[in-house]
Length: 215
Image 1 (cartoon, rainbow, N blue to C red):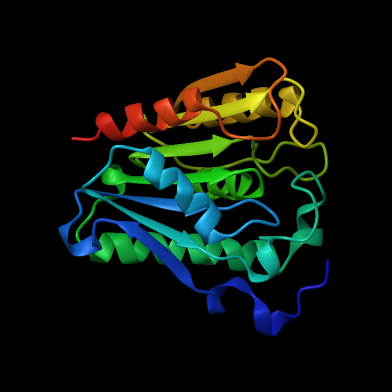
Image 2: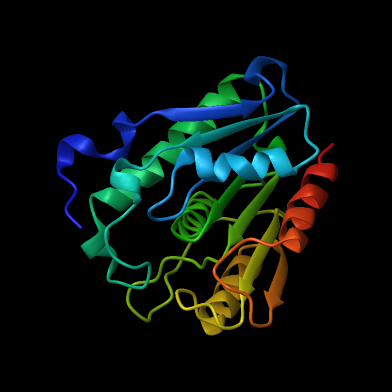
């Protein structure tokens, strides 16, 4: 996939749903998968009972956050990956500027967006309201897990995936869970036998439980 530099992600629109930021009790940054859209991932917001949550969903340029797989050498996904991480960082800064703490903010993504969500949280470790990777794993440099600094300080992390997902192997989900636990996250790993590359109701319920646990 070719993404010319002028069309990187910072220039793309942000879709919003739920409460206005200035009135919200919490926020959720939602990252769509490859080939999908911000509107697609926002659909999950409507499945949640969250009237006081602001939902922000950025749109990726050409509907992909980076051109190659998450297990490809990291350099092969630049500069798109750095641009995508910058978008997440900018949205978090927007949320914080509105008076919503990181501890009240969830970063959620599905598939490629889930990999991005997990990678951002690992690279910018702090206490978040929650981190959710649906059918996703940390971005690795080929087959080598990467080292991260800092602590997630008890951040609840939900990892949901099929045991036969064609894009995300069970071994990589397991490795992601271990890396995040080592960073101090409280990891809830849910593996679903025979499920497709999708989101199920149990995962939605898991996200709802994280939201319900916010103070």
